[in-house]
Image (cartoon, rainbow, N blue to C red; front, top):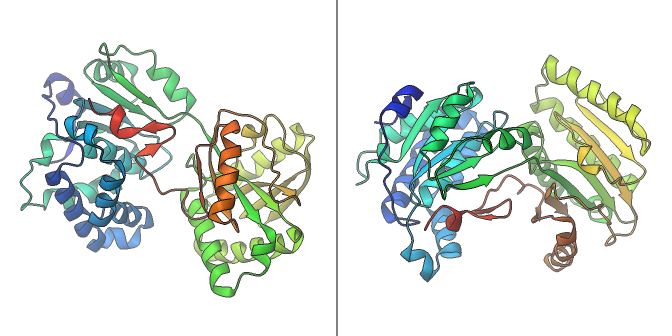
Length: 390
């Protein structure tokens, strides 16, 4: 039976890791059944993050991923063994996607659960334990443990792991780099990243009602749904084309209507957001104006894109924006922190040109607005299946 284990029992009872081939049929059958059960649960219907995860592990998507990544050489590989997952505390569903990385690559997994993720974990555990017809003892592949604060336990778990997936930013990564690991332990470090959006203003102004509503909903899901905590959530909005001011008025007013209806801003978040905007305004001479809409939506206009652009970060509906009438000449200052660019109004051909140029700035993902959270098995520069198999 899958459960949330006491960490001491995990450390004292040596786990003998089970290994499978990537995309093992029994694992796909299990995850597909899990998707069906979670989707039907009351909790998922109330929680879009749980529902999105269940949708991602549906059979059709897993088969699609298998076809995309299954190569002859991969068929001869198996999981490396025991994985130690350290998810971030600010993204509720991250632990679940990290776990899927481990399961699809055929590994046994220890997952340290952030406190905010426990509710979602319990929903998944309940559904997992109700799956009886799959010929796979999934409890041998999944070991959830409660969150903890002392470094000694992280050190001990690191010492028995064959690979570690460390999320949560530079501070967490630097801490785990100090811990003792096995010789040959594979480490996937997911450090702090910076993401942005590029909008063609001309396309925004001519969008019909349905398309505009679709754009607003997708942008909301990329940002407000996760409080902009995801590494792929845009902080900066770059407006291109000849209708910038008109497009801004349309887009932001419609977004504000949705935010007022759906988004709940806590007192702490409100204070932090307001304070952050004031601090950045005082420190940066590239800021020309701040527009505050009831503290639910704060926009900070930039006159130029500085070398320290990666420090212009927003949360809870705080966005920086820059206008550029030249549609295809967006010169980003170099940074290794860039991860995802979401776009609206660009064709696939145009995106490919932009993507080719963006490699100079270390961007590794360019997707349409609404797809920033759509995780893949090639993530943050890592080919997950190859890193976690041998």
